Length: 540
Image (cartoon, rainbow, N blue to C red; front, side, top):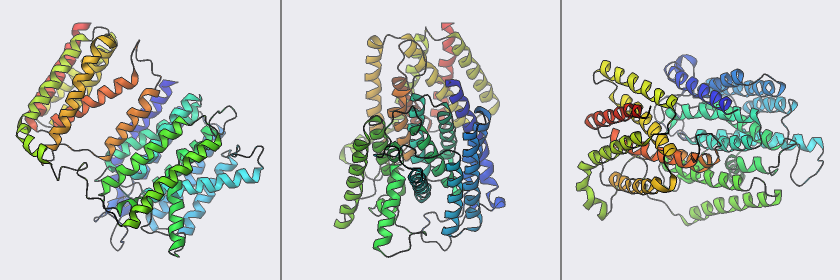
C-alpha cells in the first residue's frame, strides 16, 4: 500500500511541476489574470496569473484516476469537485456575484451528500435524524469552502494551511487503513507542494477561486469521510479540529460584519489574516503566524483523536477563546509589532552579531568544508547500504557529472542542488543504516546541533541576503514534527524515520547556505557531493 501512496504522490507532484510553468505563461490567453487595479483589498501591485488552481486540480485528478479504482465514492467526489471548480473558474474569468458563487458551491455540496458525504455520527446525539445530518454537513462544508477561500489573500496562506490539514488527514487515514482517503490526501498534498514552489512569498502565481474552493471542498470531504466510517474510533469532532482555522475565520468575519452592519456576503479586509496584519507584521510574518496557530491546533487534534467528543469540543472552544480573545485585546490596546527580521533578510542586529560579523567572510568555506567532510565520512561508513541504492547513487552521480561537463558553467546552482541533495540523502541514510545509534549518533547529533547554532549566528551576522527563512520553512518543520515520527516506512533495521528526516533536512539547510554563497562555493560543494556519491562504491 505504501507504493500506492508514493505513486499517487509523485505522479501528482511531477504533473504539478510540469504544468504550472505553462499555466503561468498562458494565463492571459486563458483569461485567468488577477489585475489589482481599482481594488484596495489586493496586496499585489502588478497583474498576476491566477491559473494556479488548475495546477492543483488537474494533477490531483490525474493521480486519483490512475491510482484508485473508479467506484461510486470516487466518481461522486470528482463530479462534485467539477461543479465547484467550474463555478470557481467562471468567477476567476468574469467575477461572479457572491450569491452566484454560493449557488455553485451549494450544487456541488448537495451532489456530494447524495453520493454519501454526510456527518452521520453527529456529536452528542446518538441515532440523529437524517435531516440533521444533512443540514450539519451542508453548513459545515459550505463554511470550510468559504473559509479556505477567505484565507487565499496572502502568498502561500491557503495552500500552506490546507497542506498541513491534509497531512493530518493522511496520517489518520493510514492509521485507520482507509486507503482511498490516504491516496487522495497524498495526491493533493503533492500538487500543493508543487504549487507552493511558485506561490511562496513573493508569489509568481495565484490559485484563484477555482483552486481555493476545490481545496476547501476536498479537505472537508476527506475530513468527514475519514472520521465517519463505521469502524472509525476517532472523535466525532475531528472534522472541526482539522478545519478549525477556516471555521474560525468564517465565525469572526460574521461577527465583525454584523457589528459593522455590513452585508454578510461580499469582499472586505476583515478576515483573520487581515486582523493579524493590522498588528504591523509583514505579509510573510502573518503567514508564518497562522502556520504556527495551525500547527498548534493540528497537534492538539492528533493527540486528542481518540478522546471524547466533549473533551475535543472544549479544546477547540478554548483555542478559539484564547486566539480571538488575545487578538481582540491586542487591537483594543492598540499594540503594534515592529516588522520582524526573521523573514526576508536581516534588518536589525544586536551588539553581539555586529561584533561577530568579521567571521562572515569565512563562514562559507567553514560550512562547505564541514558538509563535505561529513558526506565523505558518511559515504565511507555506509557499509550496510543495499547494493541497489549504491548503484542508483552512482547512476545519479555519473549523470550529473556528464551534465556538468556539457553545461560548462551553466545551471551551476541547479547542478549543485541536485548533487548536494542526492549526496546528503544517500550518505545520511547509509550512515544511519550502518551505525549503532548509541555509538556514533550521539556524537553526530552534538556536531549537528553545534553546526545549526553556528548557522543561525552566521545568518544574523550580515545584512547581505545570502540566505533567509520563509514561511515554507515552517511547513518543513511541521512535516518533521508530525509526519516523521508517524511514518511506518520500512527503511531498515533500527532506522528511526523521524530522526533520519530531521538529520537530512538540517544538513540540506546547511547545503543551501553554502550554495547561496556564490559560484565558487557552488563549485566546491558540487565536487565534494559528487565525490561522496562515487565513494559509496567502496561498499559494494
